Image (cartoon, rainbow, N blue to C red; front, side):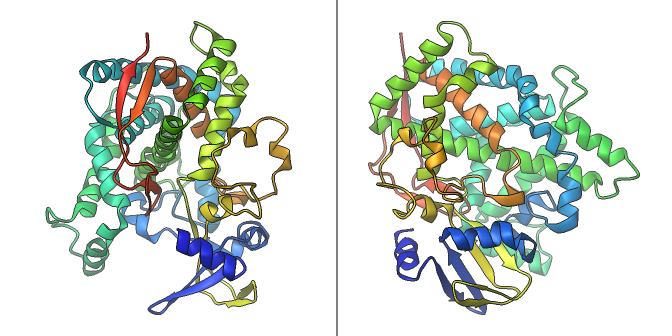
Length: 422
């Protein structure tokens, strides 16, 4: 990442790298990013080849008219007005995690905090979107996530996929095992017993679309792919954000105390209501600053479909474009003292001072992440509830080394020990 940032600074925010026959342009200048994500968005297709074995033809991997048809009926389920309906189910998931942490704190054992936050985020998604308890072993699935997000494992997968040999997978091929694990999850969700038989859920909508003869794009495979999308992309961002927050708080205990005090001031001894979460401006600022320093989606990839010009470079159809939120978020042109953790940047009144497109944790333009606001609600709720009951002791190296693979993850994980508060 440091090398990419130095090259970006020297080359004016747009520089090419040639890998074999492919030309890849890295963009970190805001004008160039707006050009690709907004001004000429239809000339740059989303590039997600590496994740198609996992997501198939889910909304996250497709583009154009098909993307619009798939996204449109799902969009109402991610409107802020429906989050109040989700809220009791999110709260149940957090309370379940609090109970689980009681045993872990009593044992004093070391825990991988990302495994904990991933299982929490997956439980939230299953309850809120699908009306199901989590119908799978979260530890096993988290292992599959880690195996696949290590992009070094992908070479054998691509070779087998091209030769049609995906049916037999060796034990050494962790990424292929991850694919097998994920292929079983949608059926497990669909086959699980509903919690409350809610009629208006995302899962019900997908099933109704499948049965609608006027929506041929929503076949059964599309339903399965959409479920996989939410169980991965819909959980990974929340899980990583919480993990990075806990790491930063371990280095800034005064920020932890401010979060606890805000909870005491806003909702006191009772459980927070949905409207309370909206009032927790400091806790939210901590989350937003963490997303600036460690955006889970550190790079957004596109493929040019038309000839173009960016920063004096001639772009040809087929060229790959990498837009890097990480490089933008750490650029002193747009942020004062960008390497410093300062939640005050995001307090009310200061957000409007930010340069447009200088903050991109959920992308920008029409491809802005559909579940971004829901992820933020989940994160703030989990953060305030868990920190009111536990102190998290970080056991790893400082500073942590980052691993920019599919997502921005900590190299070696996040080992923690949990301590119950009296």
